[in-house]
Each structure stands twice: as structure tokens, then as C-alpha cells.
Image 1 (tube, rainbow, N blue to C red):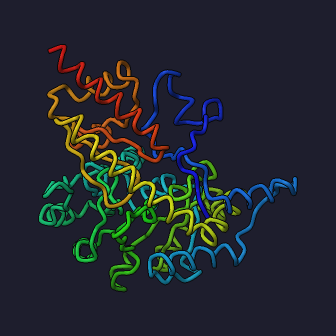
Image 2 (image 1 turned 90 degrees about the horizontal axis):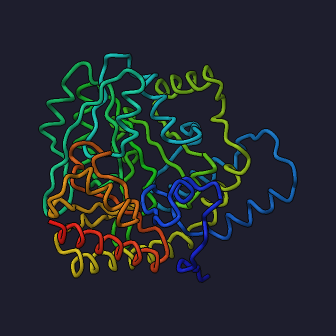
Image 3 (image 1 turned 90 degrees about the vertical axis):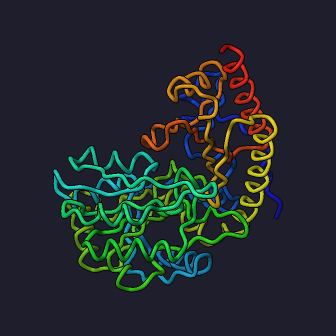
Length: 392
């Protein structure tokens, strides 16, 4: 089946966070939300459910669990048992829950930096101190500083490591050796690993994601793995995610917390469940086509930046549709640069400093859009940055 990813869809006035928060002349390329229609099989499933006219309370039937298990077995070689699967309206709410369940105010959560900013907000908003282990740039990509992680994990106040896998914003796919080394450090220091793997399906051809859940039993017994079809299939508004917990004691604590909070079953709506089932059962062909298209867009971006934005450095991602671009070569204050791009260049990117001090000087661009939209965005960047240089 052919899928038209070049079709431009007008998303204004559709209750879109991405588009309706932007001024009419500003092109939004920030939040991780695709401008593509999802898989036709998902749309068919939702249309069929809508035609029923009844949208009552939902229940997780066996075929929902089977869809999740089947998908991760086929796509990632990960054998998940039904009893490990828990649910949450989203991974960010789950991160907040973990901060409350497995830490106490005054304790600490360790994480890399730069990192997806809800990680440290999930700590801070619950009275927990985020502790950062800065990533190191080697050969144009991020690597973990394991000596630094080991030193900081030894602090008895550190109770959790929030891992972003694939890494956001850098797009790194951690190798099995890297994950095992991190897992051993955390196990030896009684630090629980929480692995956010929401981008795990968005892997460029020739690369492979290693689920933390496929590691040694001792390491996976000390882990929570968070997944969802929402980034993969552009379903974020349907609020459905999975929390995979192998260890029964950890699982019991999570379940008891959710029940006490009024979320006995994760509280998914019927449309979220219908979409999840259709995505995991029938979405593979669409996803494969999507990643081929995104690879073409990534190549286009890299070529464009090299030729037209020469002071910029692209961190080429191995996964995700988010590209981390170092604009520090333009010499502007990072806050001023972001505001200039948005207010004068009329392009809204994600400001790098939101991801921590290690992100200063960077901007994150979302390339999950028609190629013509991407070219428009890059033209706006080029023209704005050239004007900044001319004004000096």
C-alpha cells in the first residue's frame, strides 16, 4: 500500500497544541507531534467505533494484551508476559507516579543531560532533586559518562535512574553493552531503572533498538519500561501507554498507587484502546513506509544545513523524528537566538536550554512533516540566521 506523506493537512483550529498555540505566520516545528495522518487501519478502527455511537466505560480485554505482546515480539524480539503489563494515561504521568512511589521528598533521581525536560520536572514537582550526568559528545553523537554515573549513583539518596531510550533530544540508540553497564551500576547501588522507550519504534533503516527488558534477568528485575503507540502512530491525544514491570514487588507498588489515585486500570478511553489494538496488530507496513520517508527527510535536512547553514552542526539521529542542531557557531545568546528565530524568522523550534544547561546553544526541530514544510522551515532558519550575522 502507498501512503502519502507529502500531503499537507491544515491543522489550524483543530484543538492542536502544536498549531493552535502558534501565531498564524509562525511555522511550528517544536513539539513531538507528526503532521501526517496515522495508519489507515487505525482510522478505520476508530471510524467503526465512532459509528457504534456508544462510548461507555472501557475494559482491557485479552486481545489488547495480545496486541502489545505480539508487537514487541515481532518488532523487537522482546518476550513480554501478560501479567507484566500495566497501563497509564501517558508516560509523563507515569514518571510523576514513580517519583511519588519510589522516592521521598529530599531524595534524588539521576538522569543524563540534556534530556527530555519532563524528566526533571517529574522530580522537581514532587520534592525530589534531579541529579544530572552530562552526556559526552564523541564523533558527533552522545555517549554516557559511566564513571560519572557510577560516582553519582553511589549517593544513598539517589533512588531512581530515569533513562531516555532512544535518547531525546540526541536520537541515540543505546547499545546492549551500554545498557548492561548502566544496569549493573544501578543494581549495585540499589537504584531503580525507569526506561522511557516511547520512541523505540521510530528507528531509521539499518539501526536497531535494544529494549531494556531484553537484558539479563537480574537487570530487568530492577527496571520499569515505559512504551506507547502514541509517538509511533501520532496518537498522543488518545492518551494510552504501557508500563512494563517484571518484578512483582515493584509491580504491586505501582498497582496499589494507581488504585489509590483512582486509576484502577489506567483509565484508558475506548478510542485509545481501539487505536492501540489496531496499531500493534496492523500498523507495521505504515510504520516501515514512514521511516523510509523520514530517512529521506533527514538526508534532505543534513544536505541543506551543510550547504546553507554552514555554522550549524547536526547531530544525526539513529532514531526519533527529532533532530538536535548545534547553533552555537552563530555566537548569539541561546535565549535571544531562540526568540529571534521564533519572532523574526517565524519558525518555532524547541529551545535547547529547556533540556538542561547542556542543551544551551542547540535547537530541536521536528521533521515529521511533509517535505515541502520541512524545506520551508529550513529556509526560514537560514534567512533568519543570515540576518542575525548581517546585523552584527
